[in-house]
Amino acid sequence: MDTVLWIIAVILVIAGIVTLVRGQILWGIVLIVAGLLVGPGGVSVFT
Image (cartoon, rainbow, N blue to C red):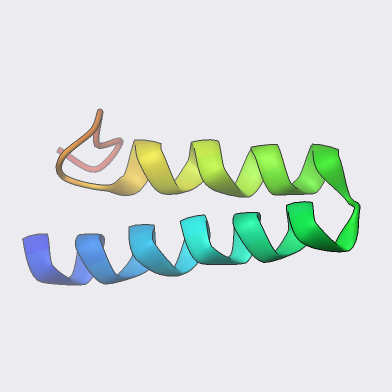
């Protein structure tokens, strides 16, 4: 389960960074924060 959460978190953070680069600052920040919340290294919302 931890591996799946890490993969989801990494995808969300990368998508957030790409969104920031494209100029959509609000969505980029939301995706990065969501990735940090999902990841087992951060505050996981699933455990």
